Amino acid sequence: MKILAIDPGYERVGIAIIQKDTNTENLLYSDCFTTSPKDEFPNRLLAIGDEIEKVIKKYKPEALAIETLFFNTNQKTAMRVSEARGAIIYKAKAMGVEVYEYTPLQIKIAVVGYGRATKEQVNTMVTKLISMDITTNRKDDEFDAIAIGLTHCAHKKL
Image (cartoon, rainbow, N blue to C red; front, side):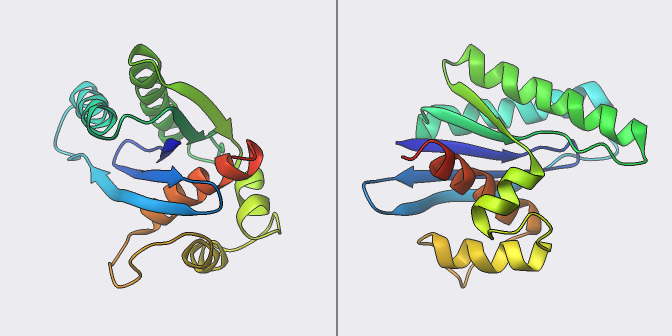
């Protein structure tokens, strides 16, 4: 099974494709897709949707695993991220991909076993849980996307 895992944002979107076989998870692809702050917001949403479509067409995942929104003190940012999530979910559903959502707590528990785990702890566990090239320099957004994909594997007992 192939899983498209997304750490949503509107400036940076963590994207990962995970191949789940009988006893192993392999990272087929990861990226931190960025949009320009110079672009108008609707154009940024369009770029995100286009990128998601491109990845879905290339890898043909059966599932989208995406993080739910954690509301912080900046409501404008939270609203923009939720709009980006909407564009991503819409694109996946329109292309026939099932959508699964996971909270930050679920992700930390699935990957680290502790709901208050730090980013560093999550990143360290990701490299131990999935077959991936550890020499590649990945951004936190990519590690977050991979962790979301691993959470889906754990929750769905794939």
